[in-house]
Image 1 (cartoon, rainbow, N blue to C red):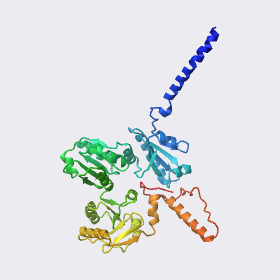
Image 2 (image 1 turned 30 degrees about the vertical axis):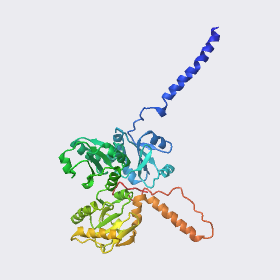
Image 3 (image 1 turned 180 degrees about the vertical axis):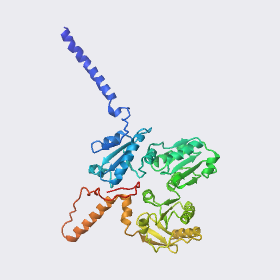
Image 4 (image 1 turned 90 degrees about the horizontal axis):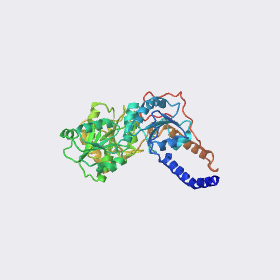
Length: 441
């Protein structure tokens, strides 16, 4: 009888055992596990087999798309090695990874790599191009912005000072003195990638004097690297605050270089560009102060300046040569056209404020002459924004199209495609100047 009863007991208990096993497996499922991912304190090497899984596993991943023969990449590699363990210890860790984009070309094309190195930070899987510094110390400070709170609460003068110091110089800072956190939260989330946001619940008269405001609530924008700040007294509806934030994402007068041009391409305003002989000269600095006064009253325009000595190739695209009388003012659309104001081609040394006012009045009244950006260095200027490889491919395809049209007008046009442009060789000369925007192809 015992041998007959045992199978019955086994059959009756089997469903319960299966239920327990299924329940246990669902509890420990990796998809539902609350165990944090493994801490990564070295630079990960990614390829097509582990790229997507890494991006989905870690909230913040900084990726260097490099080529082994690229000089800029070789200089960047040791900096990333230094930064990786520091970023791994943040409250919200940032993983540093790299991809040999010269080898894994399909992965590189998928992520729009157009030069080396191409740097991106993936936040919850969403990529953002990185144009910041590449030295380890500055890179760490810059990347901390992406994992910082949307709005930081400051409750003392020392907290305000430390916040501004820790924020560094690469992003504008917005501090709401006497403002409620909820007033700024939506805009802080929207513009988190472009600025620091905080509210100060307590501050002394010394702080009010330092930032030139005499009542609260008030919103102050700060540009530490330019020693520049602007005060906004309201109204504090989101529409008006957003207008203030967008207009003050740049300093009153912007020095034009390859880095600031990348920021300006997202700004829809026209650029009042002043071309100087040398923007470091004392007379140029005095003119820039006058331009700041003009800029504060014309926030629908961006005011910028560039020195011929600092970026001659760029100034040549606006027709500047050795015979051009400087300083020269134009209104640039940020693309291929600019306007000259008739009768206000240049600025004399006397009464420059009145001359700038006359220039702006002439522009607003339509007393202008339309010109196109020209010059042999335009290709170099464009390539600094989008990568020289992309430019070469476009030029090659256009040339091939013209060639095919020339040799055959009756045959249907057949255009082949090429999977990959040939990379430059390691023997090519490398630039001695190492800038954040540098890429090599």
